[in-house]
Length: 170
Ligand SMILES: [Zn+2]
Image (cartoon, rainbow, N blue to C red):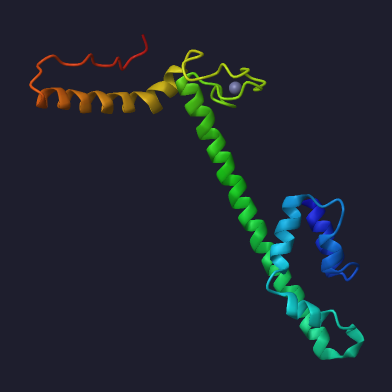
């Protein structure tokens, strides 16, 4: 984000225009897209604001309003990025816990032959699951499946009960 900050500061201080900012060669594609979206819908006003500032107070006032709008949009985008980063971190924690609960590779779950962690051999059950996480995330699902199967069996007239899962560490 520091690159965007620097470029935006250049623009807000009048050292470069929006076009120069967007054509900056060291801007990564995501930043370019975000900035491009920020300017979309503001083109007409931006054109007006590009009139030489010496033409009068009205233009200056339009320029400062445009800058204020840009700052507001930028702050909103920063909040959205922070929200997304937080969601991503939560999803990564959930992914790692589930992978450990199932004994799978936390990077690719055994689906990537190029995986540096498992070379594609990390499908669920490829390593010993972590018991506490298994009991937290997987066992309730197994019990639910067994209850459902048991009820189905009873409806079909069977009397044999399915084997109950162990609830303590073996
Ligand atoms: Zn892997």
